[in-house]
Image (tube, rainbow, N blue to C red; front, side, top):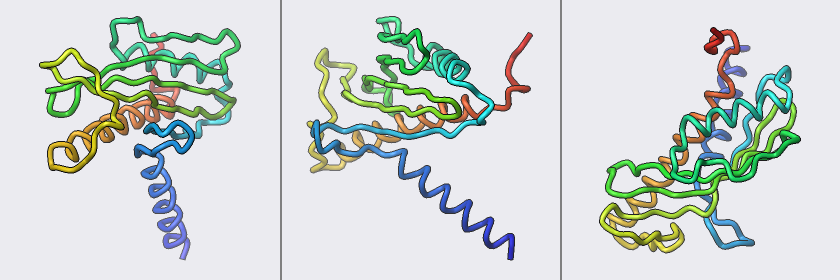
Amino acid sequence: MMRIIFSILLALLSISNIQSQSLELDATTNMYVMKGIIQCDSSFNRKALYELSKEWIVKNLKSSDNNINLDDKEFKQMTATGNVEGKDMNYTINFKLTIDVKDGKVRYTFENISYASKNSKFNFPIEKIQRKNKLQIKTFEDVEQTLATLAKSLNASLLQDPKKRDNW
């Protein structure tokens, strides 16, 4: 009986995690965003989570503008810009990432999402993808999946066992 209850709870947690990993159209801005909340060990205070998030940004978001645009001295929020290669490597995905930090949890928001073909100097907002043909659908899904992978990486980084961190 306990195994069944545990399985149901695990399934529900997985579903809620999947839902937070998709692009949603913001009704106010009419722009796509991806948001999520990462529940961490309550022993992690705001400053520790802030520093871990900052470390993740530096390691994972390699952009020419040095990544972090707003670095809050109170350890509550940071804003960064990033660009990553799309899955098929024919385009680059550009975005703004905002991370809000409280004791024991982190909220991330990917916004201002755009993509640029390697053959073009123009940046196209993801809202311009009309999804009327297979290529447009594939591009939208690739952008969504790439950002979801980044979100999962941030999640894994923050939930990593502190004993397994490289503390030499």
